[in-house]
Length: 227
Image (cartoon, rainbow, N blue to C red; front, side, top):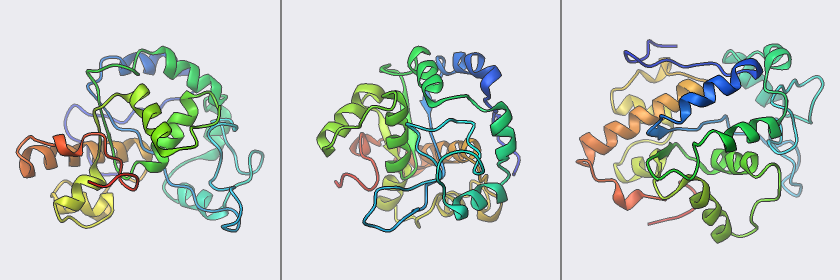
């Protein structure tokens, strides 16, 4: 992983420090969630996918003992430094425990926060599923977007959607490389550092390519809406 900008660190959150780390979120002005995308477990005629279901599995997921999973997804994560053994031993115990902490930390329904994502369809869906305590998500696009606005507010921006209008290549690493943020081959590969890369890309796009005005991208999630 390359050196991070001065004053910025990627912090690990486990069962034993969850409440402490959540306190820091209340002071945030920008939040950038990220998660690796799942791969399909079964044929297109089924609805089972991913390495785990955020609404039903424990965050201390281990492929040998937990939900059905795709071996290539597990290999992808392990090759990038994720230790399933550590998550089994020290990870947040359940999705409901994480949801309770997130819902109670004062982060959501705050107008002062901007939410930044890259190609955020999956990860915002995961976040909504966690926050809903595993209850079914709305079955319509309008209902889903209303839920997103309820929890995240109006200031949601997707770097992938902005990059399209700025004629940048697809893929966060390629966007970052085009913006001279970090060489593509050296970019961070796990969720925390990837979140930072998306935030840095957003800042550079906003202030150096769009002259500070990203209002027309407000509330647009790449892959859902079009301008």
